[in-house]
Amino acid sequence: MSDKTKYSKDELDEFKGIITEKLDTAKEDLQLLVDQISHKDDHGTEDTAPTFKLMDEGSDVLSKEEINQLAGRQQKFVQSLENALIRIQNGTYGICRVTGKLIPKERLRIVPHATLSIEAKNAQG
Image (cartoon, rainbow, N blue to C red; front, side, top):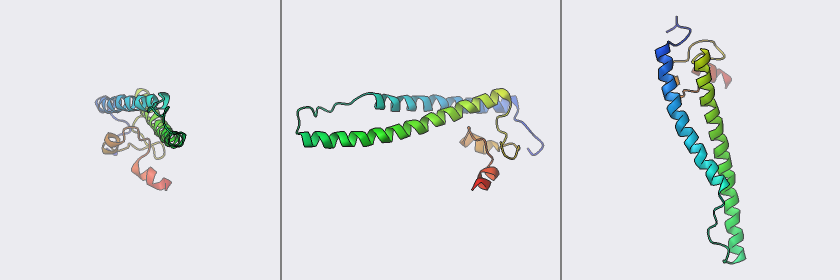
C-alpha cells in the first residue's frame, strides 16, 4: 500500500456505497430532528394550572435546545459525507490532507468521511 497514491475505481466504488448508505440514514435522522423542532407538541396543558404549564414549557425549551444541538451535529455529519462523495468524484478521496498519504481502508470503512490519517489526527493533539 505504501506505493499507492490513490484508491482504485473498485475500492472507490466500495467506499461510495458505504458513504451513500450512511448518508441516507443520516438524512433521515436529520429530518426526524427537524420535524421535532418545527412541530409544536401541545400536550394538553391548556387547561392545567399555570404553574404546571410554566414548568412544562421550561422542559420543552431544554428539549428543543438539545434537539437543535443534535440537529446541528447531524447537519455537519451529512455535509461531511457529501464532501466525501465529492472527493471520490474529484479523485482525492482517502488521501490524508496533512501527510498526503493514503488513509488506511480500515479507517475509511469505519469513518468514511475521514480526511486525516490516524497519524495526522494524533499529531493535532
